[in-house]
Amino acid sequence: MGYKKYAQYFILSLSLVFSGCATRIDPFSNTPITDGYAVGLLIVDSEVEIASLANSVLGTNVYSYPIDGTKSVMAYRLLVGSSFKVNRVQTLDGRYANLPEVNFKIEKSGIYYLGTLMSNQRSVLLVNRPVDVYLNLAKRKYAQLLANLQPVNFAWPKQNPLQADPTISYANSNAIQQWLAKAVGRGLNIGEIQPVHAFHSKCGVLEQRKIDAPDFLSFEDYIRLSLISELKASAKLDPKGEMITGKITELEFSIATGSAHWLIGLEFSIGNQPLAYVQSKYPVKTSAFIACRQIEEAFPAAVQNALEEALKTPGFMSYLGK
Image 1 (cartoon, rainbow, N blue to C red):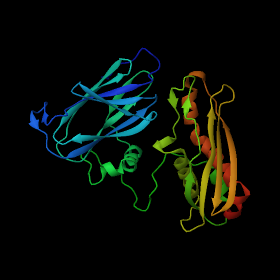
Image 2: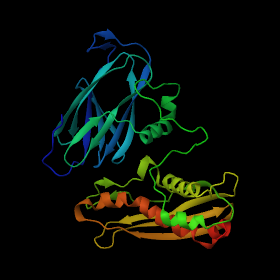
Image 3: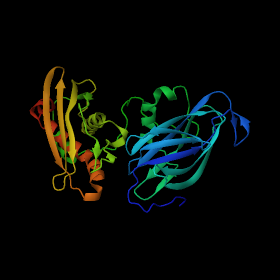
Image 4: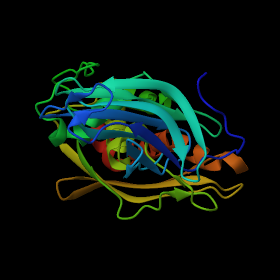
């Protein structure tokens, strides 16, 4: 497969090594590097925490870029006219895995997709598999860096210009849809949901893993888009309706054996008038060695549970005509 398997069960930190050129003469083609710059996008879709990404220029100078969690998208400023290759992943304690070598020649200014780095507890691989949600994240996260640059070796995902919100992987709840199907009242317009004041995201005995929301979103954006998805599917989303805003008042999890759970507190308002408040506790079945992954994977179901409880409060029911 072109990559090396590790004997150890956990890979906690990796560095991706680029060999390239930082001078004005490209050593691979022996041609001058022209003025101007390009941007390279590297997607990380990992099952294990990757601590840092290292860019090694001809094996001499190493620059580290943090990766926050197991899923991310990184952007690198590249010199037009330079060449480099992506050929291995190296752990911070010196172990490494060879990758199928990918060579890049930055011939013109623009945005280059460098690949998607995938890894689990035993192996790592760089694949050519751009995913819409990663690319949409890059457009939001690096808007200033990418301004006025066009994709070179990929295409931006097609989006409905009337739909400003990104697509998420949330699956609508049958229970919520059945409940909303009986509503005969006004439609709702969903505004901003404010983040929780504090959230301890580290998980595990040694806190090796960081718990993230799905689809590279913040927790508040994921909850907001999940609520919009439920209302849209039931024709209860009305852009001209009353603007409902919200706040995450509590967000925490536990992986304790027999009592693992998510706790989500949500508060909704219309203007300055309180509409609903819920404190939703969602139990999660976990196993000792994969409890953190199971907690992270259970977050969408915990959101479903919290939204169902919120929509059944008297405040929401008065607007929905229940």
